[in-house]
Length: 235
Image (cartoon, rainbow, N blue to C red):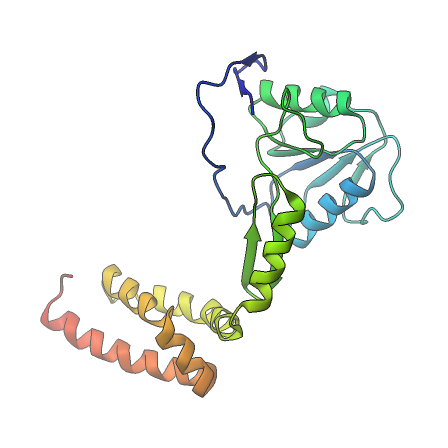
């Protein structure tokens, strides 16, 4: 991996990067550009739309027939103005020189860019990990750039995942906002409550009694916390 200056020129890397920083990103209203129109670009577009992206633009003279209809198409070869004002870019053509140009232009503009083909001289800023999603639980795996190995590990993790956690995650999507809304309780009390129900206790209650059982337990616990708060108002 190379280190870059602000204007996009290369400079030597002072030390090897120990690992890439993992990030779960909300792209709902962020403008995203995919440069390329082939199978890789189709996968990127479908993944972005599935994640809630609403402003996806595909720049390519030719586009695969499977390209989803939720994207905006620009049937042109790449030019720098195509990425003005965007938040995220994917260089996904089958032409290394075009992908390199995309990376360089993104570097000059401080735009995060993903490059589909590997190139140590003009690499992207981030990679997309192997992904498995079941309800509210999302498992992502990266294996040092080895996509096949990452997919293998992802599949093994997904198969072995205790489905009780998936059930708990679904219930907590409704419960967490309710607990956070209790402004009459100190923030530390609310945090304590969420920690309690986000572990084995919450999992076991949901397994035995479902969502209703967890809500009933929360009401009792809140009543106890209210009593404690009146006696010791500060955490």
